[in-house]
Length: 102
Length: 237
Image (cartoon, rainbow over all chains, first blue to last red; front, side, top):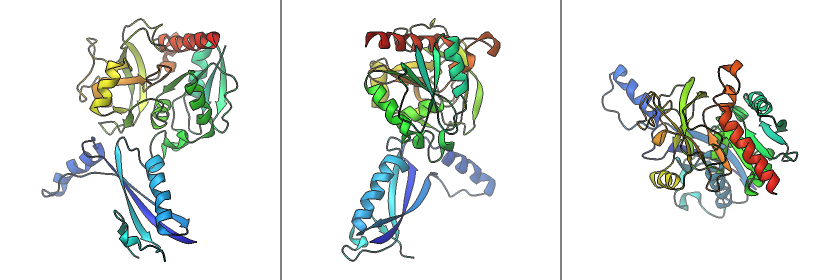
């Protein structure tokens, strides 16, 4: 068994009012920043999963992200592999998984 | 007849709800979040508060508590469930009522008296109401009702929009920036029910306006409607 560490990045879906993003945007003029727009504020959850292989661990994270970490009605999520490799499948080969090695 | 009120860690309106049930003349029963046993009650209230600290998203952790297994089974059998404020958020996260509650458009916690109006007087949660605007308190940071346009159209077509925030002239505060719409809810929706009509949630607190000594009993039409529907359901079993 290996341990795999992930980040799940959750953001409000496009089109959903994001008052936090708007508040950040409204503060920009106070910093004399004029080149920044389309700010969205979300949350990031990091977690470790023990599994035989990365694809198996990813299934667990994906199910959690759908059921608990995000509300699919209003939020979209993205899974990022932070640490851990599998001898069976290279994480980099998985579609939609961004690999950041630390 | 016995009606249950669930206490989650962080509930703060459970005692108000138990009191409103006493005022309505039924035996209030306290239910604990760690047990799926509803103690044979004929109806359930999920009260206001900050269940499990509202961590992650308001209501989501409560959704996975043992008592919610009992509540889901009870609702599936046709039992009446009323979610108030945080209880509405728990119902929405549990998918027992449609939609989601977003951060208030103002980003501020809203604590004040608002006016809401029942949209129909033939539902299990409104049939004892007068149809006039009720002035009852809100106290929430995440009460902005959201569903996509198709869902909102369905809700309106099926009569699932039970309460709307209204202006002083009685018209719904449809503009999300209207001060009478305290959180920016789409189509001024303050509360909805499921398709079957036996599960309803709303952000305002009817149980906090349940007798004259609390300011008014404006909320009792709603509480009595729910209680009588629970009684009729129990009698019909």
